Amino acid sequence: MKQHATAVASLVGAVKNYGSLTALDGLDLMLHRGELLALLGPNGAGKSTAIGLLLGLIRADAGRVELFGEEPQSLRARRRVGVMLQSASLPQTLRVGELLRLTMSYYPSPRTLDDCANLAGITDLLLRPYAKLSGGQQRRVQFAMALCGRPELLFLDEPTVGMDIEARQRLWTAIRGLVAEGCAVVLTTHYLEEAEALAQRVVVLAKGRVISEGSVDALRSRVSLTRIRCITDLDEVAVARWANVASVEREQRYLQICTDAPENLLRRLLDADPAVTELEVRRAGLAEAFTELTRETTTTQEAA
Ligand SMILES: Nc1ncnc2c1ncn2[C@@H]1O[C@H](COP(=O)(O)OP(=O)(O)OP(=O)(O)O)[C@@H](O)[C@H]1O
Image (cartoon, rainbow, N blue to C red; front, side, top):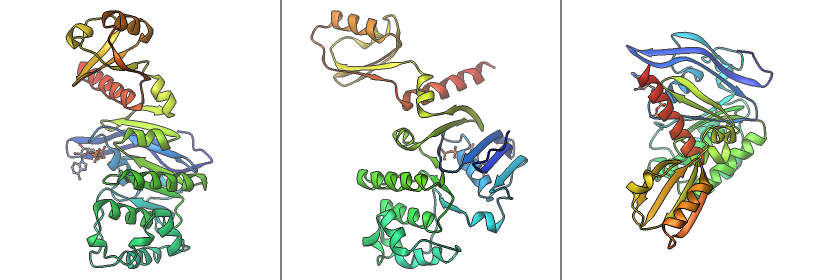
């Protein structure tokens, strides 16, 4: 793989086995300054393993892993990284402010406490014991800890799990700000709208390999489906037999139809049921693209 001037970290042909299980199967991944990369994939695809390699928490069985041109175990390289992992075991007795000050002390030129607290939206939590916070509040504190060292590379592993809508939006704004300052961000998430809202580039993993890579738009365009949703009494089994229907789902009074020929389908739908209401027509989003891609891979691998 060609080394790029903006690259901050890379995996080249990375392989990781756990006994007979291959968690990463020759993975290539390049992270760039000022870019948010969303790493997507179903459970067990290898996302956390890839992050673990880049953080030097585990070692590859084969391939090359570089963090700022060094081994990921190098302290100098690790000081340039911020991390928010899925499970954080933190000292339970400390107050939030103490925890943040402690984390700041590990870095050569940390942000100020106020700065971290503002960015993460935790100014009102600084005097509270960490252990007594709600799950969503704890995630915000972990975010503050991840960004306090002015990282040039930030790993966010499912950062918004347990957050309410306002906290999530606030975190998104903070993440966008960090990326605009030049920080490279790796985000793993199962909320596809999060990847859609934030990512410049999306890499989809399945079974330890990259199955798709590109912008959100490029990924979406791989699925040329349109989703039609409406209230109708039409029988879903009958609709499923119509031409150009990829799938039909009923959700109480609503029928949702995915099609690759929306104009034809709409004509037929309105002919068949002139009483259709609440008609909604949308281009397939990342969610559909993702489902389609992972389904394709499973089918191809099963056929092989
Ligand atoms: N320490 C370990 N020992 C044995 N198997 C492991 C270990 N860590 C991960 N695996 C296996 O490696 C594969 C990849 O796991 P990984 O955690 O990287 O997936 P993931 O994409 O992060 O999944 P999720 O979305 O569920 O977090 C899985 O099959 C997992 O069971």
